[in-house]
Image (cartoon, rainbow, N blue to C red; front, side, top):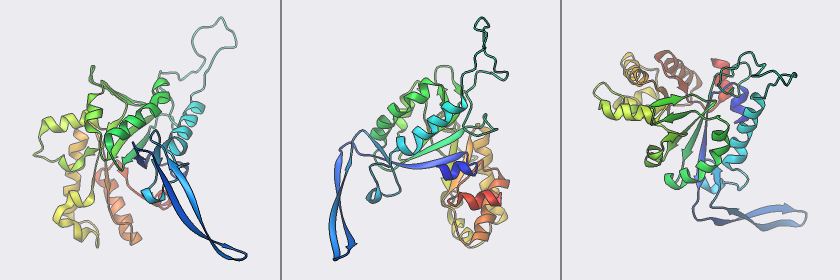
Length: 292
């Protein structure tokens, strides 16, 4: 997360795991000692009330929780960028802050109006994961740090952080919320000219970003894109998805593109940008920052 923020990434994804039944992990390690080799067993405990972060369950560590790695640092940044201003003369009313307009500042220096898109890629059961994540968000909610959608007034309220679930989606859980402080990753592949308008409109109230894999969007044309730059027909096809999502006020993202060779990966990213993709999916954030 710190690596991404250091180069100005406004969208960061975490892979999250929740285990309703806590468990113990025992890992045997072989270490070199002065007298030769020695085997030892390390024991780790994974609790049912924690959300763990990592790409693979085998390599999860108990210390690497969503709270430790993401939520707590982000909350501290927000607390710092939203100080209290009061007049030295206690008889004066209001705030001496000249730009006070009722909105909380985001975490980006000199760009406080820019929100951070924080993604949670749910790796196992979505509903129990949602129930475990929700209490962790309460400090953000209490301080008006989260963007949300009010189903009663049918209104989106911006905030410094936009939280989105992707992967295994807790669709029903989010739909049941009157005030939705978390959003769902919208299905970009469904944003076509012949899409069911009612379904697309419902997704626009559940999502702020619609995404899809490149393979999903290009279909049979996908294999050629792994070896060459996009053809004009492929560009036109991608642009139609972007344009449709934009009609409903949603941002867009494509994942699953190639990452090598570098010149081809860069050409694809440049085309995504020119065609209207709002977020670019990258692994090497420093290379992408230098390129753009």
